[in-house]
Length: 150
Image (cartoon, rainbow, N blue to C red):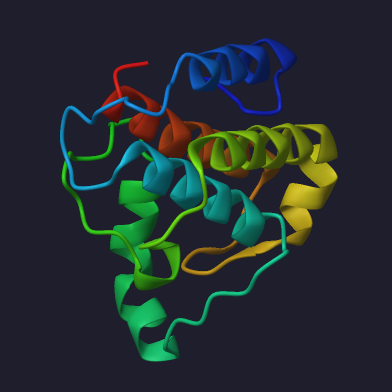
């Protein structure tokens, strides 16, 4: 299991992001490369505590068991899965700006480490261990980098 708090994993992810370019096309899905970069940045901003997502309590209660299994399992995310409305970015900034933003957010998240991660409550799952946070953040970003073949 790769963990985003590991410096080698962080460096590998940054290198993969650096391999993207403004004309990179997805192997699946509808997001442009700019939208994907912005989308991934948002996940770090929410999971860094910089933004707050709202989910109706009844949905959280009903979907938590399914979400936990999907989000934290070692099984890769399915291609073309739905994106939560608060993670959609219809009008991203320029490629270079979004790329820099993602690398900055990723690096900050990794360097903040376990104590900061454990202090943040996941919108669906509540409080998680640092290892769970690290894994799910890696898994999500890896999914989108694979989507763009890097």
